[in-house]
Length: 339
Image (tube, rainbow, N blue to C red; front, side, top):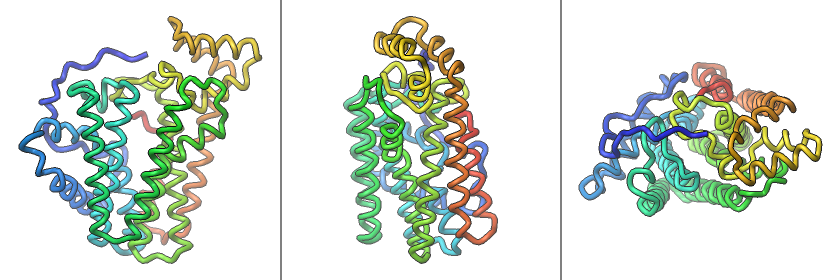
């Protein structure tokens, strides 16, 4: 299902990270720049021994979805502080670390049209680089206060547990929807929930508002991940800028495939499981045909849309204004994007 890796050497990864496509974060553009500055300054001590490797990380920092979520939430509540800048840098560092590690786990060759760290430097370097990003994110958070450390620590625990559960469930072709949602609630939604919580908390919002915006972040992350899993099945690799089809190749069941297996007659479902287990030639076409037969792609899209609507409802605690409008637009973009 994948294509050949683009022939771009690791050393070519230079220049400023790209800005988000399809989203405008104008009210917090300066704040995102400051979070970027903190991110870069934190890693600047490693530019001498690991220059090309550190430069290559810019290709992992495309959408800025998580820093933007944190900063827009704060701005919507009327107050962005230096603590927000530090925390935005820390969550982006954690997210980048998870991407570096994910590419090792998925044996992915491309990320944003560029070879992954593991394809250029190998798995050992990728694992150590991800670990270094985690530890620096925790150190950054420790400069804020204990609450921030507890929130980011708890979120990172959930992220790691979700990733671990996904890996241990590989090959389980009887995975349930409940199991799937438990995985993505950790691996993706925990960090976006954390961003909504931190943005509101450090803007001085009341507890009820903090919880509503944490809920917004969680639901945004769930919808985003379902859409991402759909793209892995039916996306365009050139548009996505990364290796697609890795979920089926690694026997990781996602929502549309789980729904499909539950809707097929038992004999057909077992035949499809055997095909996935054996990695038979033409597997992708066979799975797509089954997904169309059971309308499982449409089902997964509906679930993503329902969760995105819930996320928009969570934003009703915010005053109307440009930041709330952008946060609402993020819910639409998360399920309609092509990458």
